[in-house]
Length: 186
Image (cartoon, helix red, strand yellow):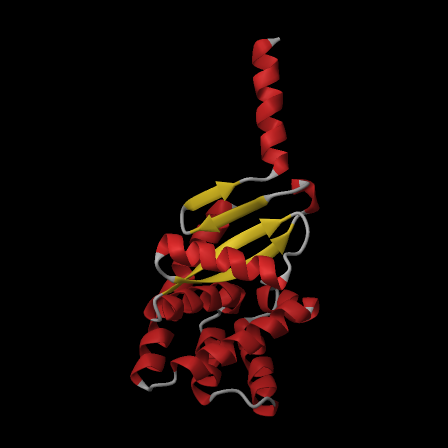
């Protein structure tokens, strides 16, 4: 899976970078980011659409014509629409999610922001999320956007990942460490 993500990242970066440069030169960075967020939400909400984009069985030209029809009905930013048509024509729709992630990272870096992946045993309240975001902002010196995930197996605590740094204060990890320590003693 890691190797596949690496390949997808290598495919996604040039597309994201090209779109970022074009959007920035056209002063449409915010509009393009919003348009990509809408597409990302559509992919996330529709398992059928997501499977359709990733399917190796459906030819690229069929996907491109279907996407063209979809974009014709939707009110999508023209820059985003043209970009999606190029991605479809090049047979790279399977990497669209990764392209959007890479674009968001470029846009956030341009604004002096960073993102943190936060996994907790239960959903964070707005107050907890805000406090965590403020703490990370103080520590990193940048505005931090949180991507929140829930994993009940953590039992309690948090796992926070910012770039290559990982802070794991989950009970699951602490219990695993205790188990290892007890095996060494006994």
